Length: 157
Ligand SMILES: [Zn+2]
Image (tube, rainbow, N blue to C red; front, side):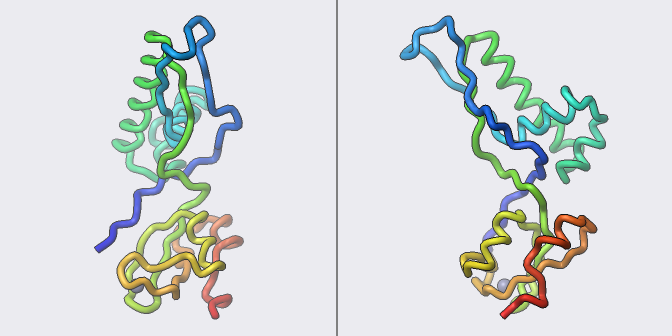
């Protein structure tokens, strides 16, 4: 049984994605990867100064998961500064919104990223269990964004 990834909701995707120390030869330079959700954790906690609980809610993860993401982010940034390494921001299981979706053929329910769910339109999106393409948004998480933009039952062919 295929398990869908655990999505982390982010509001911010940085335009500047590469930070490089100047005082080091390019071929001697090491590079750390900072994932998009780690940048979001730093932004919410250390820039927006939100409480941990609020941060976790915004990213739709547990407090423990949020703390883990934040700790990773701080370690990477600290290592880069202390050891003179570049930082490249890329990748991760991030999404602009998380949709609760259901397969109409096998009944499986799961959380999917809004971006993946958009692929329904091109027929590129399938149930991870039965490969059916009859997927609907359950609209159970109450987000306006989801209701406005998701592929809905009424638009199914
Ligand atoms: Zn299915």
